[in-house]
Length: 255
Image (cartoon, rainbow, N blue to C red; front, side, top):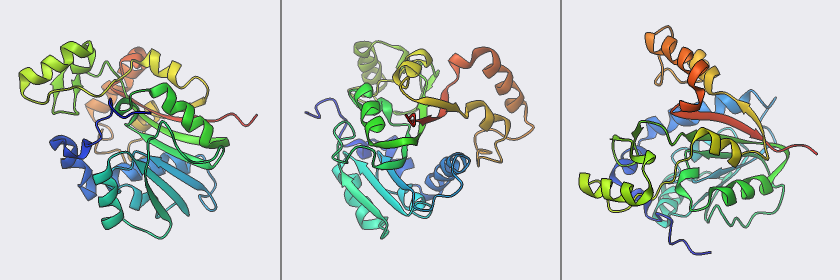
């Protein structure tokens, strides 16, 4: 398979670079993911884990403190070089690999982490097929997903309604603003995300995290007891399909 629709040098994106190499923000994100996953497992002991789109490994090194075996993959060669050089651990193996064509055997992993990456691949359906394939029966994928109908698209700065536009218009919009030449990302609506993940059983943490941000290390997203928290809970109740993003645990059926 060719990579012509991949942004294989994503770490050169100035916005992405700012966050990818920020250890504090990476740790906070990884803590959120671990808190959610920990509710589904009595222990991570003897659990095998895969991180899809590990970037420069700044989250991988934190995941490696919890999972005894972690494979971490990314298609960005420079990111993988950085991960191997700066974020190595004995139990982490970094692979330059296409997430749409993984070389791992079927039913290899108890846990797959797919956080904010489905929009970066040219075929999200193929991605989910691969995740389903490498998960063990009963295994769980942490799936963090941005909604296409999020007002502010943040991959190239805060650009309103960028993801709402057809691709040709989105490319022109980016060029007009001087933010880039090509809009690589393909975000999906809530309805299409549900279709994308239909083979899995879904455990939805989106609203629970808003209700209990301290429990899930999410006080940077919403402050407990704040007006924003209260309004967000009401909004999700009536307009869940317009939520800016979703946190789902996708479980591969045991049978």
